[in-house]
Amino acid sequence: MESPHDNRFSSQYLNLAEERLGSVVLATTDDFFAKKENVIKPGRGIFIPGKFTDDGKWMDGWESRRKRIPGHDWCSIRLGAPGKIRALDIDTNHFTGNFPPFASLEACEITGDPDDSTEWTELLAKSPLKGTSQNFFEVSGDQRWTHVRLHIYPDGGVARLRVYGEPHMDWSTIGADEIIDLSASWHGGLALACNDQHFGHMGNLIAPGRGINMGDGWETRRRRNPGNDWVILRLARKGEVRGIEVDTNFFKGNFPDRCSVEAAFLPADLPAVNSADSWGTAKIAWQTLLPEQKLQADHQHFFEAELQAVGAVTHLRLNIFPDGGVSRFRVSGVKAD
Image (cartoon, rainbow, N blue to C red; front, side, top):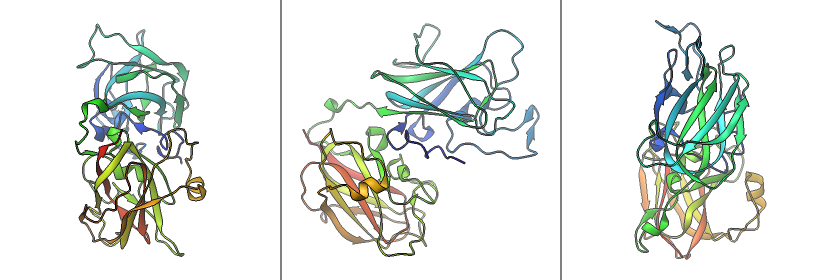
């Protein structure tokens, strides 16, 4: 079954409504059967046969009661990373006879949180949904949004809502010599491709905070052939790297033996290269930023003096030898104009 990361939107954009970015489900008309907060939880949601509450079947999602009056249900969300919305995933996983047949979505850009006077803009017109499925929709427009409101018609359950887009950061407020995490997802960094992510998704590398467990990192399968594993990241902005952190938090018997980092300056009009195969064959002039370094288990590794001067760069390639897991990858640097 498809995971929330196995689609073309997650390889191009960040989920602006991700819970760990600070997103909050603010209000709903009804969440009688399953609480509204579930709609932005990680994963696609699980199903536990035989598990019930006093109000009915336990469901891992947002579910309203059967509507017996006119109208429909909705819930509103403050985005943890305000930005431009490019696509939606309205996931009805495990909702079979109780999913809403239609949904729409509105957005607004405001300071604070919405109230009865807030003006909403429709980004997705009323559209049909399938049960126990990821329902993908593309969104157009370059407006920055801070909140979204999901409408379901007339009632029912939604397991998860993903709001894929581009975080908007006002770089004019960042000083020329100010050190900032150039790879952070909430600043606009993005994990583009990797050769393997069997146990842990590459996007976890640039997520907020330290990993909460071994599953909250990038981890490859055990390599049984020559070579090494790698991941390519697009920085939030062109910059000059001053420091690198490689955190193997929770990876004890499966951390990489060594790592290195390469850097490249790629033009903004570079044709889209989104697959591991195309990155592997693309003619890119990678420069060594961090030569091979020995790694330890369950440890934060900081590198500054070891970095080589490469100037302004836009993309980094983290190589691990031969395989294993890395929890977080941080890139401290200054913006380059």
